[in-house]
Length: 110
Image (cartoon, one colour):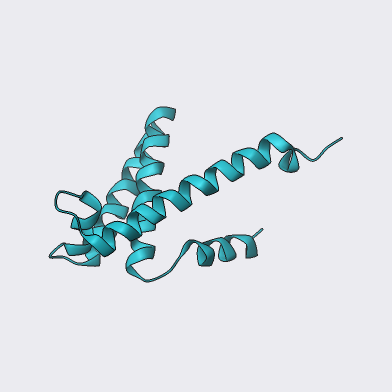
């Protein structure tokens, strides 16, 4: 029997997730570099609270995820998890880290 973690469909899903994260991180890096007016992402880099604004958002979104999980609300869980991932990527960008460093750390934990 095949290992389900290495089936072609699973590999395609992982590849699609990687592509999505890479594309999102590229947008974040672009917003950091260009600071377009009206961009929420750019506003996080320019916020008067500095990185604390992103740290607060991570705390807020984490609380919302916990509440969604407690309520067993799958749609809200996905929404809040996405918010956490987005704000985490912004924080990584602020700290001059990249996805390869995150990937290496996650691979080390397998």
